[in-house]
Image 1 (cartoon, helix red, strand yellow):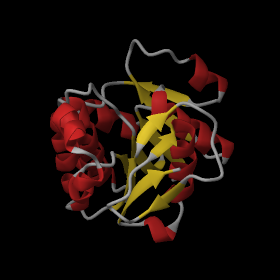
Image 2: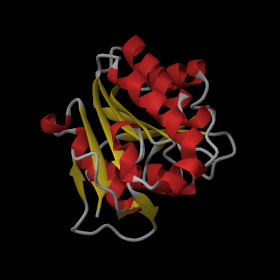
Image 3: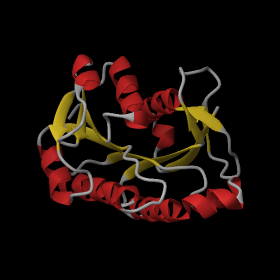
Length: 204
């Protein structure tokens, strides 16, 4: 098994993760919605699999489409929360277990779980539902027994990758980070033995 499947890999942070994986010459596939713009992925030689990350059978079929050594969930959702903040990660975990894939990565957010106090109260008032769904997703992943890494970016920005971005285990930190940096850090953590069963904040 050599490939990596990214759920939500056609836009935003997911696309930056795909770019970073391809920069490392890692064989990459992306699960994308039927209406997704595939031009950027196709230009990078990424295999696209049409499906819905919130549908378990769709994710299992996508996993069955290739020979994957790792799965990454970078699916976002509306700021008001909902299925897109929990079910894609749950489905990734269930599909990984069914296919005997050990390595999984979830993109979460600073402010979730034990990093709650890293964000001010008004942010939780706005994003509270989404944060709770992400916390459920993190808990489900941690209980799975898989070799997980959870990456919690700070306030996401648009811009090139920098030399200052880093992953830290301190749950009290907060800050900004570009999506490009999140992509680079995620790709680096994928094959780092020290990142197994770790939860990181990603800041620059």
